[in-house]
Image (cartoon, rainbow, N blue to C red):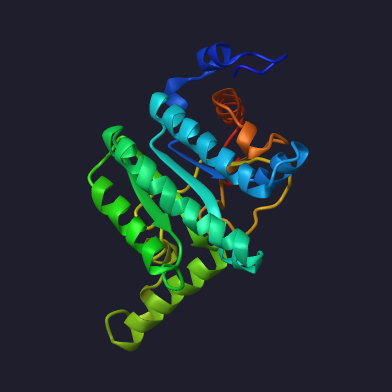
Length: 251
């Protein structure tokens, strides 16, 4: 184990990483966009736009360091309670970002998948999502899961409803339902659980994100607001992760 001392730069942190023990799946709660903008006297929307640029850079870093899965929390089921103009801006930002960057993601070998309920999203947003997923479906360099209109509780409810429907139709017996079957019916079905969960912005809560999947994820909380989160911060989180003793309930 290599403990972090002082403030090493990205190059030093990269050399500290054991490439044989990389986290396969990193999840990030991208928090602090609004506070970042407020500190600079900017409108909240500027924080979200800066956050998109940060995500672009972190995706590049994950490809660079051979991380296989990145799952980010972009828009929660609770975010519909924000002012209508803010919600409209976030929906348009997703569409604009896909229009501008999906081709580049495709060329980099990134597969895009949206986690969350499609119902309730505007038709134009659903169209952009479907086009991005279709274009990148065969890519294998990095799986980029984007939680949009996503909530951990609603995801579990939806999985339970699907399983209940199969029982009613006689396709499944209730006693056949176990943890692995329920996990397979989540939006992340077939995807290994996150090894590392990063939350930016300094808050110590999960905020209804991947409630089932993060049962044994290592947590890394940083006060850095998302727009300021850098490759160096990502590497610091990975080194921190590699210094943990992961027992999964064992001695």
